[in-house]
Image 1 (tube, rainbow, N blue to C red):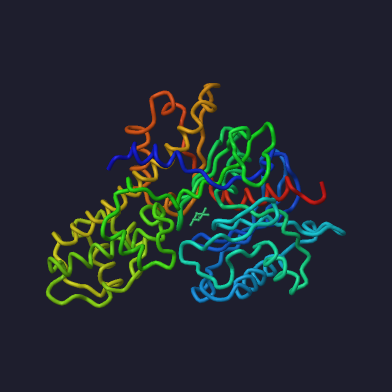
Image 2: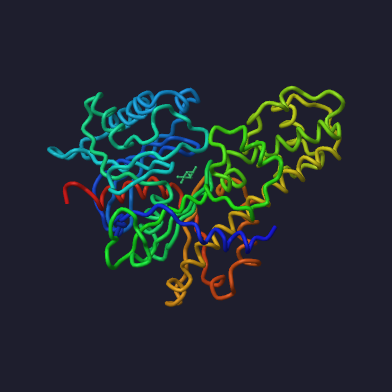
Amino acid sequence: MKILVVSRCLFLMLILCLLVLLPFSDEKGCYYALDLGGTNFRVMRVKLQGNRTIDLKTESYKVPPNIKVGKLHELFDYIAEKICHVIETETDSEIVPGKKRELGFTFSFPVQQTRINSGTLINWTKDYNVQDAIGKDMVKELTRALEKRAVDVNVTALLNDTVGALAGGRFYDSNVVAAVVLGTGTNAAYLEQSENILKPYGPPPESGQMVINTEWGNFNSPLLPLTEYDHALDSDSPNRHKQILEKMVSGRYLGEIVRRILERLADDAALFGDIIPPKLRQHYVLATYNVVEMHSDKSTELSVVEKCLEEVFEISDVSLEKKNVVVKICDIVATRSGRLGAAAIMAILKRLRKDTTKNGESVVVAVDGSLFETYKQLNSCLQKTLSEELVDEQVSKMLLLKHFKDASGIGAAVVAASHSIYT
Ligand code: BGC
């Protein structure tokens, strides 16, 4: 795959920008953060203690599948209920009399945003398809749901998870220049000099930096080598012709790509015998964590692969040779994802090169997301591609991909603090 060409082409695609006050790391106080759009939905209470120290309480929830495709008020009622549960656990020291609680809302979907505390949904991605939501202000909807429950919360900041990860990364390390999310979906944000920004909504500030949310998951180009499996996956998806790069790279889709390849091999080459197991035809039945497990199977008889084929597809008595084919497919799909992820990161580094390498300081890219955290082989393929094929020697020496756990949620709380209505 022509990784360098893909990277050059990605470099031309930058879309959503916003002026966000990034944290200075000395913020203090108790803030809430809400993180919606990844594997889990999380509510956090973040006590900022100054000097880059925090005390964090996190509650994670699974958003029920019916809510992800239900009505908008049901989604926000569900979220408000969970926020209330966390608020109920507040201690007296966390309540400031006469002040509303403040919340940073990490909303991991494309949003049209011209102010820090409002933004309208452009379209859903991943497995969300809530009705009547496009064009609605997500902050208003959340505020309405919280008001119904009579809780005193001001939604101070709305931000993409990549913007949250950038803020969270910089809270700990001021050399962070970009943030990447490799999870259920994929995307990146970086800091751009304001004078380079052509902004359709009015003039950008004359100096300083602005945060660009690239929404790179929506990248598409004739240069992307799409296979028949990618075309079929896209055409069966609720967001056809959108998020093409994301559909090749991110955790929502890798399991499904592997399943489609196995189905084809079962049909054309009787991989699992003459009768096709019905479960093999079921879309999204194979999750990406199954792929991670199978790919990491070190046992001589590939017993993890065997167990997974049995549990997910109800396929048994598979020979060692065939189990090896399954592992090989996982490897091919993960390698493609890692290499494309590297190309996308390279596009941002190229954009930043002249600004970042001049001081000789390290260039830190904050990375967050379940795929990056859990898929070791994919993660090392991404890093190897970056250092061996893409990044020139000078940048390579200074480049650091750093995992900041929960960066996007922590970032949401610190951005809420920087934009507090009380300062
Ligand atoms: C969304 C992005 C988000 C990314 C990672 C994509 O599907 O469009 O806004 O940042 O997922 O969560």
